[in-house]
Image 1 (cartoon, rainbow, N blue to C red):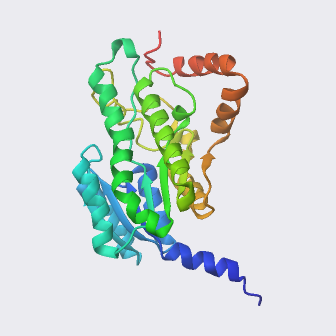
Image 2: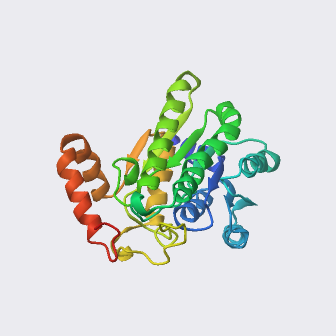
Length: 281
């Protein structure tokens, strides 16, 4: 039997990684935690819901994985700092940071309380900035990876998602700039753009007043699963890609945004206006 040395080396490298994942108590973050644990990575998972974090950690440990967790609200700078230090204190280094924590919204700006926009920016943008700032020195030592889980809303501004799109565009610009300024230091930066994914992000989306939406306006059964997204992100990190766009819909939006922006804008408006109880009038 022939032994593929390159494959063995890749498995060793993946197995040795210390990985931090934010928003790991559900959805894509939880799926990422299971995916990396299965591949032998050492995990530090963070989220606001300590009970759910504990459940995820217990499941990983029962399967033989290495994981610690820290209750983390990414809008609080010190929580983000503590999350990074949890990795250093437990494992002595940090290889990969996945900025996954995020929330969405569903309301037109005309009706939206500005505190909703601020909340979106605090979680999606500032959460990424805080965690990345404190993780960067350790990741540079390893020539490791910083990942941002963005969205189609980071490719095109979506109607009734002004704060969400703004936060994802801000995240994209931040991470792209970070990649360029550290190009000589071999820092790997990946921005992942999932299409519509079956997760809890729509049920927790904020209304115009800041309350949770509670029910998804879209058919979740037809969407890519969080587990599929996690596999794609895992493989993109392993291959040190700069960018991935997921789902046929996501790739179509990305292409049309460059070639036919006006046509795309009308298509997007029509699509979102058809949602049950759409705020678009």
